[in-house]
Structures are given as C-alpha cells and as structure tokens.
Image (cartoon, rainbow, N blue to C red):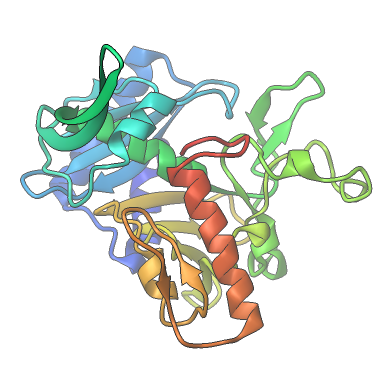
Length: 323
C-alpha cells in the first residue's frame, strides 16, 4: 500500500484484521515520508508486518520511477528507525530454504543447521556433519522476495508500459469497473512477467502491449489459490491468497484506491489447506510425498500443478529460478 495514502489504505484492509494501533500508524506515516525523502524514492510502499516471537518486523519498499525496477526493501522494529536490506540472491534462497518455523524478531539471531558435506582425503571420500549458521536477516530478505514473486498484486491499468520500455504509474487510471473488479483476470502479478514470455503470438493478439505486459492471476497454479470477495455493499473488492495466508489485496472499484499488505508468520501453509481436497502425491517443503484417498481427475491436475510450483519455488528448475 502506498505510504502517501496509508491511513485510508489501512482502513480498507482492516476487514482482514490487518490493523495497527494509532501510535504505530502515526509513526509509520511520519517515518515513511522521511524514508522517501532521504532515499529519494519515487514511491514508498508499506509492505506489511512479519510476526515474530520476540518482536515484529515492519517492512517497507522503495520504488524508482520504473515501477518494475528492483525494489529497495527496508525493515523496522519500532516503525521509526529503518534499516536497508541487501538484495535477494539465489544463494540466499538456497541457504535459508532449510530454516523452518517462526521468526524470532531479532535480525542478529542465528539459526543452526546441520548438513552433510563430502570430504576428500586422498582417494577416499566420506561425509561429515557441518553446522551452518544462518542469520535471520538473510532469511528475512529471502522470504520477502519469495512472497513478492508469488503474490504481490496490482490491478490491470494501474501501470502502463512506455514504447521505450520503462513501466510507470498510470495517472489516468480511475479504477476497475464493478464487473471487471469481480474477475481474477483483471489482476496481475506485480513483478517481471514469467508466463507471458511463453505465450504464442496468437495468444498475445488480443492483448494491449501498454497494459497487458504482466502475468494474470487467473493462470496461477494451483487453481483456486486466490479468494475474491466483494465487501461493504460491493464498494470494495478483496483478494486473499490461500498460498500465503496473510496477504490481502484491496481495491475500491471506480477509484484509484488499491494496494496489498502482508501480515502473518510467513508460513507456506497452502499445502495443508489443499491436502483434504486432492487425490495424488503432494510434495511440499521439508516433507516426504503424501497421498490422500480421492480419485477425482480434476483434483489430480490441481495437485500436479501444486507440485510443479513448489519445486520451482523451493528447489529451482525453470527460468524463474529459486524463489
């Protein structure tokens, strides 16, 4: 959600329980404006709050004039003092994928992970256990990047692509119509497109290159990973991610008011929600494959899509890499 309309945005997202105390709101409103000025960002977004055992992380992101350029991510423990996080890398994703459970709320906290490494002594090769230290700050960078790639949302028309390539905020955007706002196809992933590059020229024939340059949510795998609801007498549309519970997107039709916020413990629990419904082998991070008892072919297809998505995100494999 845009920091300049923070109070209104928090009010629109409050139906999902993503509320902040009055003093936190006042602190954020002031400090985020200072962040925008001091770091010279074009826009500052309040990304959300990651709940920790000792303290919570408040996350903000700075955007340049090109809206799809790499974002700068900052965190705060008190909504006043902000620290800049390093960019996410493939190495970070690999390193932190073994860490499970809640965040502590201490950036200097170190997780310990025991792994086997091959040791060569002459012609002999044997394995020995090595304890690896993983900083919570590194895990924070990786998990924010993973959530951004999976469920950051923007409505169609809010951004436009110039003939020269850069992506800008569409100042003429006046919101989606009520009928469009009810369709999942009217919402895009707020990141560099992945699936769009794989479409044929025939599939792209009906697309407007200045508006339809991002991946649509309607093609997300697994199907049904988004909940879309109308609230406040059709005055507000709310999308909730079932893949990352805690992510809420809101949009008031026929207005510019839109944004998303994440508040949660960053546990990828969609597999738990899908297990009672799906009849096939299910793979999820840190697990062996599991099987349920139903035999519906449609549900099997959904499960297969889920398995592909999980392995791409946590193990890597296709062009999108490890998330």
